[in-house]
Length: 205
Image 1 (cartoon, one colour):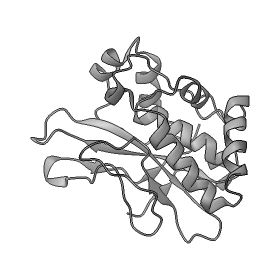
Image 2 (image 1 turned 180 degrees about the vertical axis):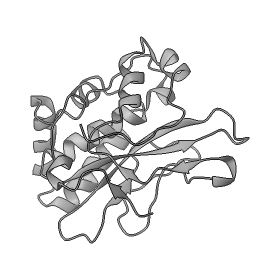
Image 3 (image 1 turned 45 degrees about the vertical axis):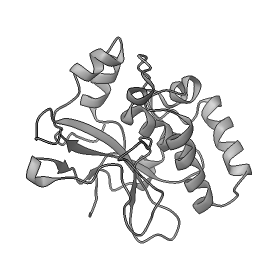
Image 4 (image 1 turned 45 degrees about the horizontal axis):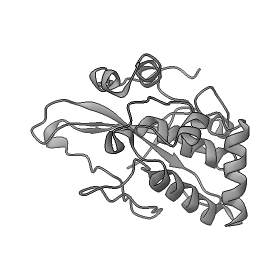
């Protein structure tokens, strides 16, 4: 799909903020270790994606009740939902100068009920003609997300007939509704009850 950057300034997609805190020592340390095992932007991006996808369990799969939302906390606790894991992957990629935006989908149950916003990322690698979306949510039976730049291999293909939506906006920072849900939840059960059920555009912060 064609993504619409929220900001015309590519540097907005390299910035550190409260959630994508790639200036944190743990994020830098992790990025340095991954870079040392790869050495170029393309192989580093794939390694960072697989690291977040495979070594940080999605808390709904693991049963972990904790709610993390800062990238550094996700790396420290090895725990997070889709939003938090997206923040972690964005931080690792931005730490090595790779522009990353945050993207969202509206997903639902198989009967169209219980709509909720799902988080993923898009990156822009050197020389690439466009942004490419990646979903590091974590694989499980029925979910097989992969690192792919030419054809998307996301965790969840959108089903428009059920009211699901691919939001085209490419956000430089986490959406306020997402951050509010994460920061306001005492545990994952409370977060699940208060997941955003849609997002709109918001001004550059």
